[in-house]
Image (spheres, helix red, strand yellow):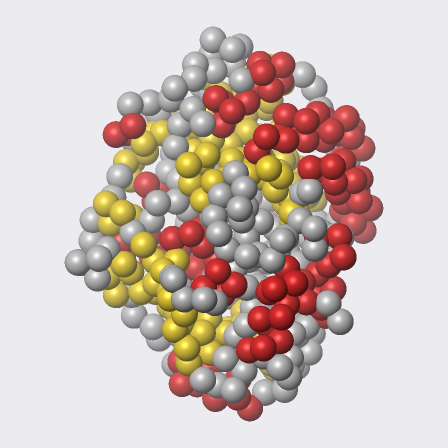
Amino acid sequence: MHNWAGNVEYRAGELRRPASVDEVREIVASSRRVKALGSRHSFSLVADTDGVLVSTEALDVPTELDEATGTVRVGAGSTHAALAVELQRRGRALSNLASLPHISVAGAVQTGTHGSGAGNPALSAAVSAVEIVRADGALELVRRGDEAFAASVVSVGALGVVTALELDTVPTFDVVQTVHQGLPWTAALEHFDALMGRAYSVSLFTRYVGDDVDQVWTKARVDDGGPTLDVEALGARPAEAALHMLPDTAADAVTPQLGVPGPWLERLPHFRAEFTPSAGEEIQSEYLVAAEHAPAAIEALRAIGPTLDHVLYVSEIRAVAADDAWLSPSGGRQSIAFHFTWRRETEAVLAVLPSIEAALAPFDARPHWGKVSTLVRDELRGRYPRLDDFAAHARAVDPEGRFRNAWLDEHVLGA
C-alpha cells in the first residue's frame, strides 16, 4: 500500500474500509495499533502503522447543512471537491480551499493544511467540532470552546480516528484568477506585504534562481473590487495564455485563469478536481515562517537556489493568517509558507532538505506535518510552544499508545 505519490509504502498488515462509525469503533477497540487513512496525499509517514490502517473513504456519513447556523457536518473521508459541489448547490461556500481539491477534509485539517491569503487562516480554522473515536472505541464530539479543542483540530492522528467534522460556511462567492510573469525580485521584496495582500489569495512561484519571480497567481473576489497593488507597474507582464506552474507543462489541469470570473470552488484551488494535480510523481515539503521574516527567508533560499535546481520542480510562496490550534504550522503567528514540489527522487530530496532547514532555522520555520522534513522533536519544541502540552494530552487520551507510530514519536510525542 502506497501513498498518492508513491514515495511512502505503508507497513500495515491489514487495511480495513469500514462503512459505518460503529465499525470504526469496533476496529479501534480491538486493535493493538491503528491509524486512519484518508486520500493518501501525505508525503510523510504521519499515517504509517505496523497495525491496522482504517480507510475513511467508504464511511457512510451524509453531508448535512444547518441552514440556520451555516454549519456543515461532513464525513472524514469526503474530499473537498465533493463537499464544495454540495455547498455550492446550496448557495454556501468554504472561506478557503487548498491548492488541491482532491484531498480528504479530515486529513487536510489534521495535518495543518492551508490555502492562500493574508486574511485566510489554515483550513482547521473553519472547524467548529471534531467527531473522534478514542482508543477505547468511545465516540466523542469536541466542540470549539471546549478545553481540548485547540489540541484536537490539528492533531496528526495522535488522539484518535476522526469520523466527521463540523465546518463554518459562508455565502457563495465568485473569484477572478489572473497570472503574471517576470516580476523582478527587487520589486517583490520591496513591496512584499502589499504584494501578498493585494487580493484574496496570492501565490508566487519560483525556483529561487534568476532575478524574477517566475509567476504570480492572483485570486480576487469579484465583490472585493480587484487587486490593490499594480504588479504591472512593478515590471510584471500579464500571461497571454493559461499557464501551469511547472515548466513546460500543459495547463489542462489548472483552474481557469485569464480574468474569467467563476465560483469559488473552480478558482481557489490551483487544480481541477477531474485531473491529476501537480506533477503526480513527486515529493513535497513545506515550511512556514512568521510573516515579518519572509523577505529575509526568501533571500536565504535564493542564496542556495542553484543547489536545489537539479531536484526542484517549483516552489510556491503563500501567506497564511494566524490561528490558535496548538500544532498548526501557522498557529499564533501571521505566516508565509514556502512549499517545495520535488522530483520523486527520495535520496536527492533528503540530501537537500538540511540546507533548506538550515537556511530557514534563524526564522523558526515550522514544517507541514504531511510533507517531508528532517526536523525532529527536539528542534521543534521551541517552534511549537504547545508541543509538550500536546504530547501530555495525547498520553492522557491514548495511554496505551494505540494511535502512536514511529513518526509521531520522532517528530511530535517523543519516546
